[in-house]
Length: 261
Image 1: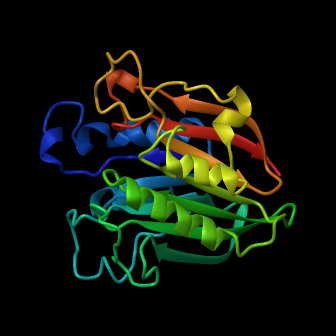
Image 2 (image 1 turned 90 degrees about the vertical axis):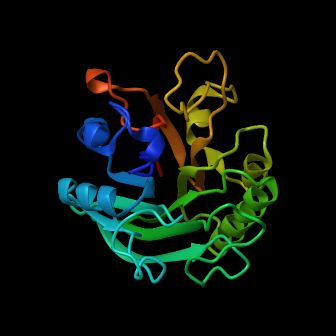
């Protein structure tokens, strides 16, 4: 699953049904309902990380801690982390890392190309305990304003992933703040990445995934994606629109995909 869970504590969310305390249990319920082996979250900060790490006890979490977070103990400092949760029962962690989508990718919190906020990509290399198969999971969130930043940030991801053998499976989850008609999608597709929802339903625009609490729109574009590189096949996919008790877990719909290597 790919889940933009929305930054907590925003002034715009100080209404019933949008506050983190109103929707955190809903968020967890929707995620757990699909029984995912891998969950890639975006916009995670201290409060939501502590909650999810405690409640998802059957998972190992990677990607919140870092030097850019050390000066703080709470709040949002224009850094929402992309945290990867994976099943501790099914997978063994082989290696992990983080790089920043900038001209200095090893410098925590760095930014370039007039990006509105520092953006990064977390990754883990996992081994399936049953089959021994190794694969890689990447979790990212592109800039939400500048087209140049989105393009350059995508190029960083593509270049870094290209270090691996062509037959080594890689899965890329995230909020790309752009759609199928934009440059990030074109770049990823040209580099051999396949989108999993599209692998099931074809190259049609299914509508918006970032609803922004507005549900009366007739048209919209999908900006959340799950991509795969290498020998990966999409078996099933879903834009998850669950709203238990009339409360949505986030201002984004979550994505679910079932894949086979």
